Length: 180
Image (cartoon, rainbow, N blue to C red):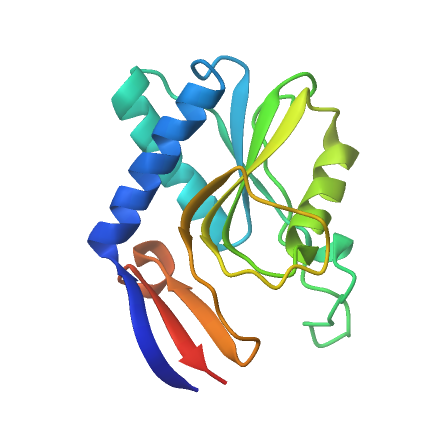
């Protein structure tokens, strides 16, 4: 794969996260009864960053959880030697029933990851509402899913790939477009 363009650098990612944090607070009239749940892997780090930004603005921490959607995928792949899916587990520190859950992921593409996340959440509890926050929306939906909060819309062709790199995993922050 060849890098075609750098779309967001670290500062632009920070600004996008600040904007999303403000939008979450405004739409929910504060953060009471809200919880951020990141989809493994990069969604978790984005949820933690959003929680920190919201704390800076509101002076209160919003609970952060993580969800593993491996067993909810419609394209389940085997990742271990014994041909079993590699499940890392979910960790949500509070009961999500009757809470406003903001599901957080890095890239919204076909909508299948988000669908799996919704299924996983509903198996854990019954939230009052589920909202979706993504750093990048690249289009090409296969399911009728849209994000409530978007850091950046990046129209792409299906021959391109969006790569999100975050300091917590990749040692630096950036979003790039690669040609397949």
